[in-house]
Amino acid sequence: MANRCWAIVVKLSLVLLSATTCKVTAWGQQPGTPEHVSLANAIQRAEANEPVFASAVAAQRFTRIDSYLAKAALLPSVTYHNQMLYTQPNGQTNQGGQVGVQSSPVFIANNSIHEYTSQASVDERISLSQIAGAQVASANAAVASAELEVARRGLVAAVVNLYYTVSAAESRQKLLEEGLAEARNFTEMTTKREAAREVAHADVVKATLQQQQRQRDLLDATIGAQRARLELAVLLFPDPRMHYATDAPTGQPALPTRDEVNRMASANNPEIRSALATVNAANAGVRSAKAAYLPDVALNVTYGIDAPQFAKRGPDEVRNLGYSISGTVDVPVWNWFSTQKRIRQSEILRDAAKVNLTAAQRRLVATLEESYAEAAAARDQLVLLEKSVQTAEESMRLTKLRYTAGESTALEVVDAQNSLLTAQTSQVDGLVRYETAWAALQLLTGNL
Picture 1: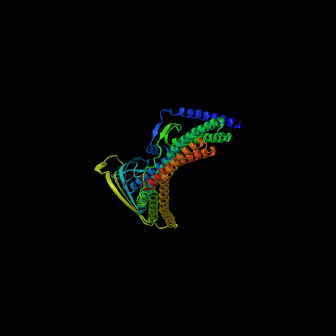
Picture 2 (picture 1 turned 60 degrees about the vertical axis):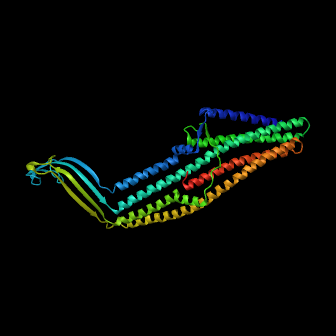
Picture 3 (picture 1 turned 135 degrees about the vertical axis):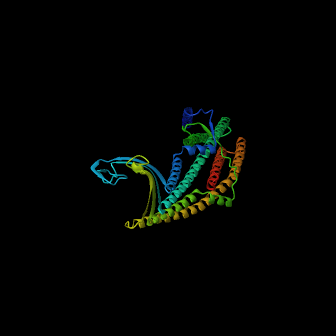
C-alpha cells in the first residue's frame, strides 16, 4: 500500500511539473520553435546585457576621454571675449583717455565711462606637472582597457560554464528518462515472472524501489535543467523564460603544447597588462608630484579692441585695434612641506603597484600550470569515460540475459542499471569539464 501511495504521489508530481513547464514556455516562445543559440552568439548577447561588463566598458570609455582632456590641456586655448562697460561720470575731466579731454569715471578701476572690449585671447600654460598628469591619464586609460579585457574574459568564462551546464543538465535529464523507462520495463518483467512463479516477490520490490528512485532523480534533473536554462537566459534574453536550444559539447579540440600556451598567455594576459599600466601610472604620479617643485610658465596673447568706441579707429584716427602679450613665471617657494608629502603618497602607491605586478606574474604562472593540467586530465578521462560507458552497456546486456535465464538476481540487474546510468552521466560531466577547461586555456591565451 505504501509503495502504491508513493507511486501515485510521484505521478501527480510529474503531472504538475509538466503542467508548470508548459505554462512557463507558453509565456515565452512556443516550445515548437526554439531559438538556436551558439556559444559565440551567447557571448555576444551576454556582453550586451551583463551590467558589470557594461560598467567596465563605461569606465574604459570614461578614462579614454580623461586621457584626451589631459593631453588637450597641454595645448593653447583660444577665447573670443566681448564686453561693454558703462560707468557713471564723476563730474571731472582728465587727460587719461586716448585723445583729448574726456569725463572721468566714478570707479577708478575703470578706464572711461564707455568701454568696449572685443578681443581674441590665446592662453598657454606649460608645466611638468601637466605633462605628468597627461601621462597619468594615459596610463589610467590603459589600466581601464586591461580591466575591461579582464571583465570580458570573466564574463566569457561564466557564459561558457552556463552554456555547457544547460546542455549537460538536459543530457542528464534525457538519460534519467531512459533510465526510468528501463526501470519500468524491469519492473514489468519481474511482475510477470512473479505471476508465473519464476522469481520471488523480493525481485518485484527491488525493481519497484529502483523505479521510484529513478522517478525522484528525474524530478530533480528536470528542475536542475530548468534552473540552468533560466540562469543562462538571464544573460541572453529580455525574457528569461525564452525557449532556446544550445549546442552539445563535443570534446573534439586538441590541446596545444605547453610551450605554445605559455608563449601566448604571456603576450595576451590582461592581468599583467593592467598591473604594468598601474605601475606606469604610479611612476607618472611620482613625476607629477615632484614637478610641483618646478616653476610654471604662462603666456597670453590678446588681439582686439579695448577702447571708448566700438570701432577700429577712434577720434583723430587713433587706432583702437591692437594686441598685447604677457608672460608669467610662478616659482613655488613655501607650502608647508605639502609637496614633499604628496611625493611620499605617490611613492607609496608606486611601491604597492610593483608588488601587485609581481603577484600578477606569479598568479599567471600558477594559473597556467593549473589550467593546462586540468585540461590534460579532462582530455585523458574522455577516452576512459567512453570505455566505461561501453563496458557498462555490455554488462547491462549480459546481466539481463542471465536474469532472463535465471542465472542472476534482481540486485545484479539493478546494480548494472545504476552502473550504466552513472557511467553515462559521468561521460556527460566529463565532456563539460573538458570544454570548460579548454575555454579557460583559450581565455588565458587570448583566443576566445
